[in-house]
Every structure is written in C-alpha cells, then in structure tokens.
Image (tube, rainbow, N blue to C red; front, top):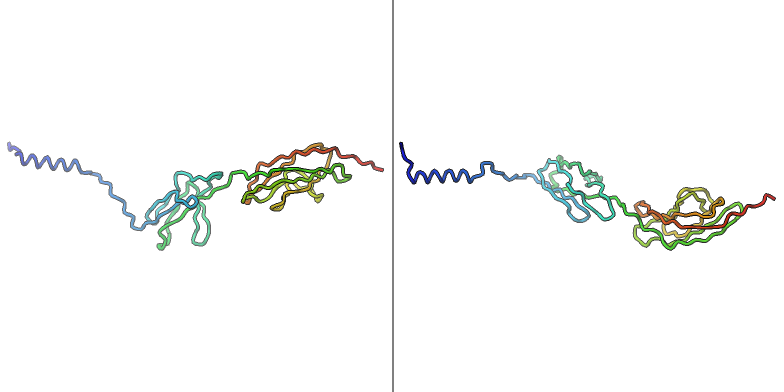
Length: 222
C-alpha cells in the first residue's frame, strides 16, 4: 500500500481548502447594457429612483409619498405629446418602446387637498322685519379669510337673494363680503351657514350665524 508523503498530503489539503473556500454558486453582478433611470418626485425632491434595462417594467414605489393636508392620488408622467398619464400604486411603467434618445423618466406624485379651507370671521347682520309682501330682509357682513387660496363664499340654505328667486346655494363673487337675503314665512330665528370655498373648489365646514327677528305682521285684506 502506497503511503502519502507529507508533501503530497499538504498539496491535497490545500486543494480541499481552496474548494471549500470558493463559492460554488457565485452571484454574478447584473450588467445593464441599455440603462433607463426612473425617478419618482414628491414635489422637487426625489422620493425613489431605480435603474433598469430598457424594455423592463418598473413597479410603483412600495410606500406612498405624503403631503400635509393632502391625500395621495397616483403617480403621473408627461408623455411626449404633452398628455399627463396616471399610474396607480399597483401599476407598472413599461419602458418598452421608449426612444433611445431618452435615458430617464420622471414620475410625479399627485395629491388631493383634504384640508378644509379657512372660515370667514367677524360675521354680523342687520334685520329689516315685517315688510308687507316681501318678508324679513337680513343683511350679512363678514371678513373673508386672508389666504392666497381663498376664492369666494356660499350661503347654504333655501333663501331668496335680493328678491330675484329661490336658490339653494347662492354664490358670491370673489372678494364680496356682504349679501342681503329675503326670508319668507313666520320663523322667529334661523341659523345661516356661511361656507368659504378655495380656488380648488374645496368647501369649508361653514360658520353658522344665528339670526333672530320678530314675527312678520299679517296685513289686512282691506
């Protein structure tokens, strides 16, 4: 029986050690030959960025961007034709067909304002009661919110405005802070909700202004 010498044994040991120390399943680094970078913006800041091979699909970020007083709606990008295209959080962006001249795509977070607009303040009124065949004339005055996104005021309720006709929510022009309302009937008191509207069409909860007046006087038929 042939014996293994010290030199042979050492050589065998080195070979085994090298085999054991080597990774038999090496992770080869992915080489992107035609890269496309997709950047997701929340305002002016990059919220998320990913680089893929052109022709790959890109999933939307796993986390939602945030903005104070707003709800996240979707991600959006502007097409070459100027159209804004929306992508829900579960959608994918396909880079297939992307022009070779472009190596990046910008996606923008879109939000919806859920914050209530600022309310009016300093509401006051005057009452002219008991006008025959007309009713009670209530003139309301208030101070509009001093904010850049304020648009106009609406008076909620079924009222007559300047005797013209019955409307549900008369809308005032921007900047107006007074209105005369004509109420019919024999109600002694009424809460008049004054609602502010911002430039995006969001309505406030409204300020309920309490008004009290005397009963209308019945006029004789002769």
